[in-house]
Image 1 (tube, rainbow, N blue to C red):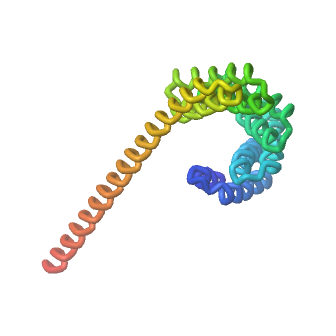
Image 2 (cartoon, rainbow, N blue to C red):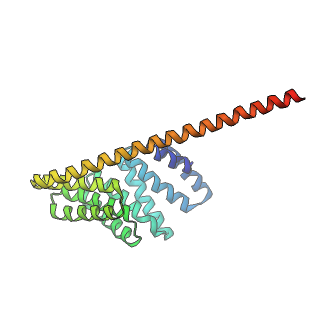
Image 3 (cartoon, one colour):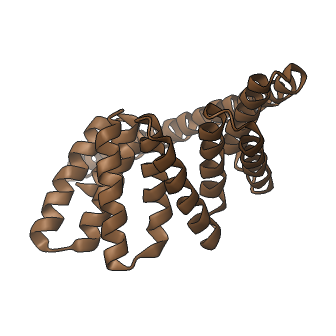
Length: 231
C-alpha cells in the first residue's frame, strides 16, 4: 500500500495516495513497525498538503516529527518540519511556520540536502514577504537561488526567480522585479521544452518496445505454425 501511495503521489493523485498511506499505516501499526508508521505519517503530511487539507497535513507532519524524534531518526526530520512549516503558513500561523521552517533549514544544512534546503529557504522567503520583511525575504530567496543554480536544480531556480520578482514588486522596485520575472520566464520555457522532449523520448521508447514485443509475438506464432505442420 505504501509503495502504491508513492506511485499515486508521483502521478499527483494525492487523495488516492493518502488513502493508500492510511491503509499502510494501519498495517504497520498492527505489525508494531514504528518506523513504518512514522514514514506513513510523513507521507500523509505531504499528500494532504497538496490535496489540499492543511489541517490534516499539519497533524500528520507533527505526528511524523514526534515519531522520528522518539526513534532518534534525525535525517527525516527536516522534511516533516518543512511540511509542518508550510501547513502552519497556509493556516495563518506565521510564527509557528517560521519556527518550523528554520528548524528544517538548519537540519537540511546539517545533512547537506541542498535541493530541499533551496526549497525551504524560498518558502521561508515567501512567509517573510507576506510579513513585509523584505530585507530578510530577499536574503533567503537569493540564497535559495544561489544553491539551486550551483546544483542545477532548475525547478528551484525557477521558483526562486519568481519569489525574487514578487519581493522586488512588493518593495516597489519594478526594474528588478521585471528582470527577475524575465529570468523566471526564460527558465520556465527551458523546463517546458525539456519536459516535452522527455515525453517524446518516452513515447518513442514505448513505441519501440511495443513494436519489438509485437515482432516477437509474430515470430512465436510462425514457429508454432511451422511445428504444427511438421507433426
